[in-house]
Structures are given as C-alpha cells and as structure tokens.
Image (cartoon, rainbow, N blue to C red):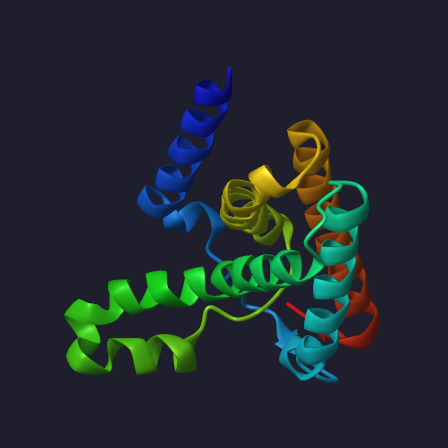
Length: 168
C-alpha cells in the first residue's frame, strides 16, 4: 500500500515535468490598480504561516523548525517551476539569456485553478516525502498538506481579486 502511494506521487511529479503547459500561469489580464506581485510578500507570509500551522496541528508533526523549512522550500519550488519551465522553452530563442528572459517575460503571477493544481502537484510530494517519518499518522499529514494548500490558494486568490483590480 505504501509503495503504491509512493509510486503515485512519483508519477504525478513526472507528469508535472512532462506536461508543464497544463499548469502554465500566463494571462492576458491587465492590472488597473496594483499587480499581485506588489502584495506577494504578504501572501507568502500568510501562506507559510497557515500551511506550517496546519501541517503541525492537523498533520501532527512534532518538529516545528523542520516543518517550516520544508513548507518554505516546497512553496519556493512551486513558485519557481513555471519560470524554470519557461526558461527551458526560451533556450532556442534566447540562448544564454533564457533564464533572464523567462523572469522578465512571465509567466505572470496570478492565482487560478491551474495554480492550485501546480501547487498541489509540486508541494505535496516535497512535504509528504520529507515529513512522513516525523508525523504520527500519514493520513493526517496527507489531509493537512492537501487542505492547507487548497485553503491558502483560495484565500490568496480571493485577496488578489479584492486588492488587485484588473480586466481582460
């Protein structure tokens, strides 16, 4: 049973790498007030707090410091994956400047359903694989990771729509 779950997580991680356009975060949205990048630091702080607290309390993980570091790492990876993918796609066009061009040209930060999918596909395996030995019950850890990512993505999406006004 544990091997099947591990195999499932690995296959989803591989699918994320092989099919990156399914969660590509590009948009034709034009901001009238402020861009979500302006409020990104606040979103990062609240996301890390909520996800860390949920993994500790619901997932019953005892090592607080390790949990915070792993949740932070997983969030950083999920934020960078679209940019890294775009840099790879830019290599034929931009050559040595592919990474620089990818960060200047997008994908632009906007929270949509694809962003939730990306977040779960990237963060779930990272947090689960690195914290499963530190939790009391793996099912509780699974629930904590999944629910915390859904909650934080929905909250950030709602706040983004309230604070950052834009149009197509």
